[in-house]
Length: 307
Image 1 (cartoon, helix red, strand yellow):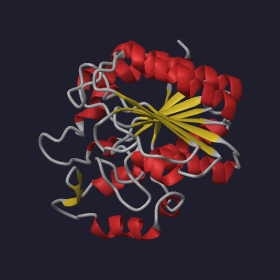
Image 2 (cartoon, helix red, strand yellow; image 1 turned 180 degrees about the horizontal axis):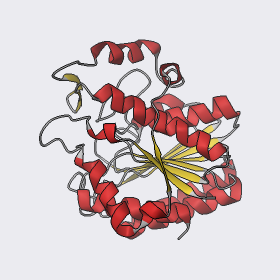
Image 3 (cartoon, one colour; image 1 turned 90 degrees about the vertical axis):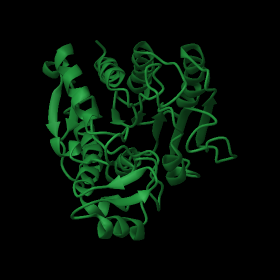
Image 4 (cartoon, one colour; image 1 turned 180 degrees about the vertical axis):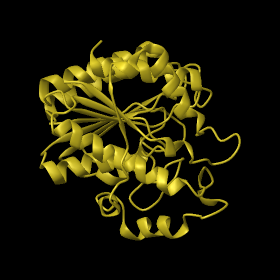
């Protein structure tokens, strides 16, 4: 079955101001690399559909959802937290990002695609049940996983997060839910300064030092993630695909490379083929150096395809 990419041009209209690292140019960087690699002809491309607002309540408190809708500006900006800002296009972009994640689940569960990558923004994995933070408004990957469980009655799903920042929002939403396995590698100590506290058995946090490179990252995945996934036997994999641990990305001090993102995708694709009928939904999180972001996404998608 083919692999698809879901995106929308309106996601580039969300703009948190000059010099903000989570910038509209991230979208064009990915698109340009897909074209130059020839992958734009090898994958199916879909326009994202906006999420039905009631589906946001699968993971977010209704008061928080209303708070975001009420404060979405018609002009100027609204600041959710010191790092997270809405302009007049941000709500539409956030609804498209969440909608793309749900759409990806439908496409994969129907058998139209084996895997789907959502190239949307803003990212989502820092958004907790009742607050947005860290560039994130709604938690796209959590919504997708919750939707798959509720709509398709999947009994067990796994979320794998290799962004350089801990997926605190996803942990907040799924802590103590035994039917969801959440695994996160991240630089520590680093924003959001979470992931080392005692938590529930379904949460597997693997903090890495600022000096960590390929060997440490690959060991964490091989020695911790893969045995946990084999024991858990998920029916679908969800990936929080952050590329900001790349050596060229000034957001962090870790030193991963293009090949590491291909390697981890290959490993997760093997798990999906063994336990999940190949079913994978991946959602863009971080990655702020435009060159390494585009190249890493190409490696990730090649891994999803199995090229």
